[in-house]
Length: 321
Image (cartoon, rainbow, N blue to C red; front, side, top):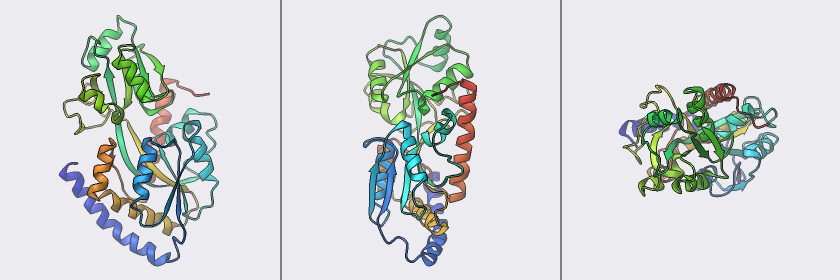
C-alpha cells in the first residue's frame, strides 16, 4: 500500500472516531447479541474470506452464514426481508450492483431495500493469454481479432470479468471475440494455460500465481493504476483506453430501515479495521486493496456502480433472462 493510501486511511479512521463515539452514546444497548453476516456466495470465495476477516475483528460475536445461489440473489433477497435491527447484514460482491440490471427480476432493490454499510476492498480484473498466443499486448489482441477467430474464458456469464471484457472487446473495439463461460475462474485459467482457449478475463487474485509461474501471459489489468503484485503489467487505461476501470469489490449492506446509530457504528468500526496493518496484509494476500469511507460515500459509490453496470449491460446487450 502506498504512503498516500496509508495516510488517507489514517485520516479516515480519525474522522470516524467522532461518529463512533456518538453511536455508542446513543445506542448503549446495541449490540446485545451476536451479529449475523449473511454471505452471498459459497465458503472460500472473496466475499466469504472478507466476511470472516471482518468477523474476527468487529469486537463482538459474529456468526457467518453462507447462502449461495442465483449469483448472490438468494442472500440479497433474504437479508432484504430480515428485521432491520442492525444484527443481520449482507456481505456480497459487485454482483449486488450487476444483478438488478442484468435480470428482469433480481428479487431485491439495492437502492430502496438496502443501505451500504461500507465497501471493504476491491480487486481489478486481469486479461491473460495462453503461452502460445501470438501477442503480448491488448493491441496485439485487436490486431489478431481482425483476421483470426478468437475466444476468451471467464468465471461465468454475468460476472464482472465477463462484463468488463465484453465492454472492452465488443463495445469499445467492435471485435468479435467469442465468450466461453466456465464454472469459475480456475477452470477458465486452466483452459488458457493448457492452450485450449487463447484468452481469459478473470479476477486478478485468481491469476497472480499462474502469471508469476509463467503459465499464462498477462496483457492488462483493469484498475486505474498498476498493481503492486504485478507491477510490470500495464493497465487497460495505459493501453489506449483512458479512464477504463473495473473492480470486483466486496461490501457490507444492511436492510434499509436499520437504525442510524447501528449503521454509523458498523461503518466506523469497519473503517478502523481497514487501518490495521495485519488486516491490510490479509486483504493484500487475498488480492484486494482497501476501499472504506463514510456511509454517504459508500452509498454514493453503490449508486455510481449501479449506473455504470446499467450502461455496460445496455451497451453490450448482455442478458441473463
